[in-house]
Image (cartoon, rainbow, N blue to C red):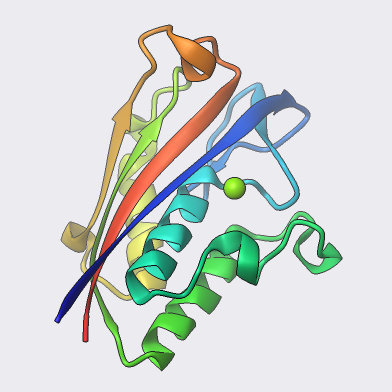
Length: 157
Ligand code: MG
């Protein structure tokens, strides 16, 4: 049986924050604001995995009212979700995602992001695809106010 899930997330860009995308810190004058490290891509992937497994969503498992997750490394949350998926007797087949961001360019960091995520998901790099898009200067992404990410995950079990 193949199961498919989708995930979406967005975070505001703010001064004095780190820009962490897919577990990789990207040098930039602004970073993503939020309760955890606000890794928008990892959050979208977590929701895709939880969705495919029928296990609710990121806010249910890691509420932003919980001090445990303040400035949390989202990769640690992803590791926990990979464990939840496996506990259901499910195997991750692939993850595909798109980061929608006006600046900086994601391309120079894409390979490192894929490697980092593939390591956590225990997948070949080819099974973890990361695409980049922009807002074409439209909307909150296009104005540089924030970053959005979409992900799909498929599971076998
Ligand atoms: Mg988030």
